[in-house]
Length: 488
Image 1: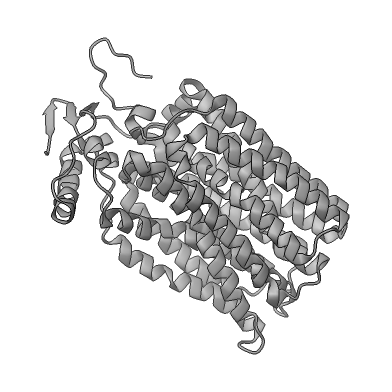
Image 2: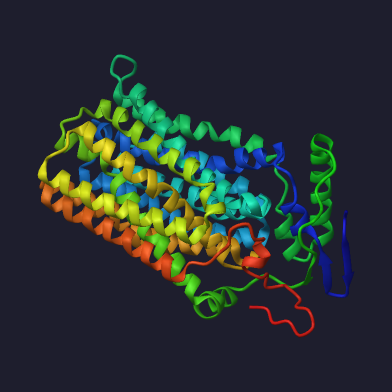
């Protein structure tokens, strides 16, 4: 079936239904591999800084203080905020595919440059530019993945892809064990080489993305219905060749009106008026998980070295199980977000992580835990916190119309990161430098409170999106309503 009819500026298309009825195929694996690698890169970047914090602190050429390590982490996040907004706006105007290459190219150049840093200011600048590339990726990639994955699998896939951040984190932790081993390489060279190699790896990503088409849904909502239908037809032909006849469509076509680019005025009108409840929900989920994650993960290596006496070259051994627990959470719990439902699972994961974090923080303050016991506690906590954090991106992407999906993701990521992410590492770096367990305990309690606040907000404002098409969850701005029908 290849339905595309048009009368003047109004046209009818069944592209969404055709994308949602596709059986799982290697095409979907290609989308995950080529686009989902973004989170692996981000995990690699974040973990490298966390794992290498001790080595960078001891580096003869940099010798960053704990506060400067926290500030450089904040610089990375500030860059991510700026990149997300700028590239997110361009993604909705130019398309998903063009931005794939621009953002990964910026990441590659900045990551390599980080390996040649000569002082705190150059290190912070290159980290900010690296963050800008990753921030831009979040907007383009999150929107594209949600738009091309069938509705019945959207939650499972989105959480799993976001969870691959921790595959990168595990890779970063394992890499740190090698590059910081004096028997293998001089640590002063090792930490620099880690950033350079991370940038070079992005060449593989560019190769894979050559095979990824533009999002048919983006084309459809920008008046390019025929091109969208042609791309879907090509996908269908390849899928049919491997799986046989395709199943029938589960719902009918949508009628759209050709329109220009969505202005920022329209974006803010929808966020602040038409979808105010979803805006409050998205900000809360994003900001609370960002503070929790960035505050703890960016500075955990400093906790290990300062309070447990773990040598900087051995930090990777402790971060590795922590990362694997974070990876297991979305993979094992993700399918429940499509079966049990978004509202129940998001509330449950945020609340569980918050309660366990408060308990663990008190145990840390009392000195009850060894380095390995502390690591085990964090592994269990973030088994639940990881799918919760991933669900924040899923919620924001599903909350708003297709025409503004990328900029919406970017704005929420930027706002949430600015509130919870930038302040977190700096605050915890300062608390750790003070050397008092009680001070850090109050930081842990703050993170726990925010996770519980997010759980309560989800229970109050959450909405059902599981197994529904994106157009049903949030109607496109270009949707042409049927006679007598009101579009919300």
